[in-house]
Image (tube, rainbow, N blue to C red):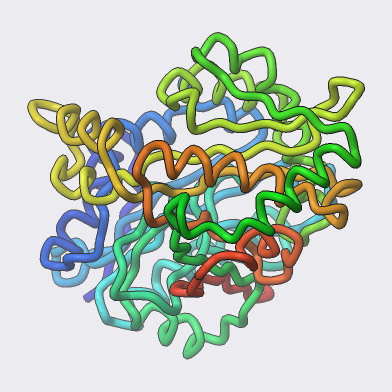
Length: 374
C-alpha cells in the first residue's frame, strides 16, 4: 500500500531532507548535501527565491516505510512573465518501484492542473541557481556539491510513465597540463586576443575586492544564457542573497574576470576546490568534524570544479574564452590542481564547451530533465 504525506512542519521538512541518507546509505558515489543548507534553502524567510516561487514537499510511504520524495514547484516569473505554463518538480528520489514514482509524479500533476499549467518538467530547483537534471550516464562517478545523484532506474521509471526528454546537460572531466607540458600556442593565442580587443584581466586578493563586481557577473550570466530554453532570469534580490551568503566563502584566487577597454565585464569564471570527498566524510553535518573536512579540501586538493562561467555573447566567437581559461590554467598550475570537473552545461551550449577543446577532456556524465503534458 502506497500513501503520500505532505511535509509542512520543521520536523517534517527535516525528514524530507534526510530521506536520501536512507536511500543512498550504501551507494559510494552519492555525495550528501549539508542538511542545514538544504533546510535553509526551503525556508521562505531565508531564501528570497520564494518572493517569486512556491513549493510543496511530499514523502511517499510503502507499507508504512518511507519510499520516495518529491518537491512540487511553481516559479511565477517563469509562468507569468516568460509565459511558460510549467509545473516544476525537484528533489525527486524513490525506491525501485514504479508505483511509488507514479504516486509522487501524479501529485505534482494534480497541483499543476489545479493551477491551470500545461506541462510538468523536472527534476529542477526553485530557479536556475539550484541543482537540475536526472543523471542518465556517469553513475560510477561522485556527484559534485551542485548536482544530484540518482540510481539508473529513475530514467526507466520516467520513460515508462510517458515522460519525454526536455533538456540535456553534459559534464566533462578535464586534465590540466603542468607548465612544462602546456601547448605554447594556447597561451600565445590568449595574449593575441587580449591585445586585439584591449582586454584586461581582473584578479582579486580579498572577498571585499570581489563584491563590487558581483552584480555585473550575474548580469553577464543573464546575457550569456538568456537564449537557452530553460533559463529564467536571476532577480536582483537573489543576487543580493548570493552575494552576502556565498562570496565570502569563495577564495578570491578562484574568481577570474576580464574587462574591456571601457571597464565593462566581458567574461568571468568561478571555480572551487572539489568538496565531494569532504562532503561524504561530513555526511550532512558541519559539526563536530564537517568543517574540518571542508576546510582541508578548500586548502589542499588536486581537483577543482567549475561552478559559473559567463562570456558576453558579443565576445563568444572572438576567442575570449582562451583568455579566461588561460587565467584559470595559471591558477590551477600554481595550486597543484591537475583535474577539473565542469558544471553541467546544456548540450546545445556549444560556445561554453569550446573552452575545453584545447585540453584533454572526457564527457563523463549526462543528465536531463523530463516533461509531460498535463
